[in-house]
Amino acid sequence: MAAIRESIEIERRPEDVFAYLDALARHGEWQQSIVSVQVAGDTPTKVGTRATETRRVGGRQQAVTYEITEHNPPRSFAFRGIDGPIRPVGRGTVEPLGDGSRSRLTLELDFEGHGIGKLLRPMVVRQARKQVPQDHQRLKQRLESGAA
Image (cartoon, rainbow, N blue to C red; front, top):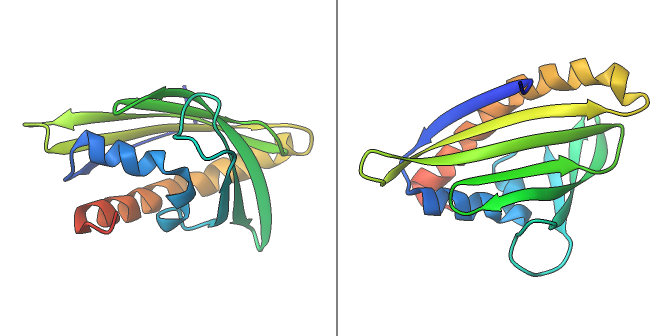
């Protein structure tokens, strides 16, 4: 079971929600801690796509590279961190609601600690438990306002 499981309903079609999530370089628009995102290559997101996110973490910046491990538009995706002491592992699903004009996004997220990261993992999980719902609210606002 994942350390964090959060869902949110969004007044947009699953295709719209997934397309915005699929734009990895735009994650900083709705994830507050992201400073920058660099996506390797210029092809559409697919299994094997890698991105490096630089995040503000406790007063400093930390870069983490992750790889897309599952990509099934517009329904599901997964990713795994490939470097750093704390590596995110996550899976998301986008389900249609009602007549298909609304969606439910569910994110399951955990972290693997490597080296010193094993000691830091509980703190990172606590912070992410607070941050993920806030980021989901920003995502919802952007999608429902038409900004995305």
